[in-house]
Image 1 (cartoon, rainbow, N blue to C red):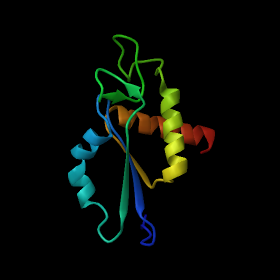
Image 2 (tube, rainbow, N blue to C red; image 1 turned 90 degrees about the horizontal axis):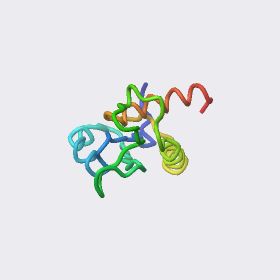
Image 3 (cartoon, rainbow, N blue to C red; image 1 turned 180 degrees about the vertical axis):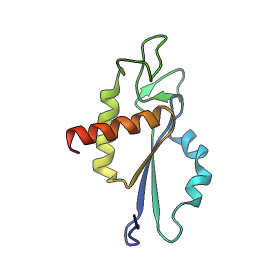
Image 4 (cartoon, rainbow, N blue to C red; image 1 turned 90 degrees about the vertical axis):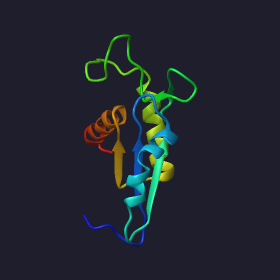
Length: 120
């Protein structure tokens, strides 16, 4: 789709488990600098709401001991994540694109499925 040159192209970035917004922004800095040829681009990086491991590592949800995201039947705390995403979408969106890495990519898929089912 052709991007409109009068408005910035807005991208929401969702980091992986064990990262935060600053870590992910550093990780994708080269990609961000290559974006927006001929059009302004606004990149929004979020830090997940679930603190894990240390003071600067976060996740979008917790899992029971020994579980992995792709085998879990429950994502503990994901409601807080939904609230954060919805608030961000209302205050800084809408976004033209969502980019997720690892757990953030799983979250991106969940958000898309939820939007299709719930009619967002």
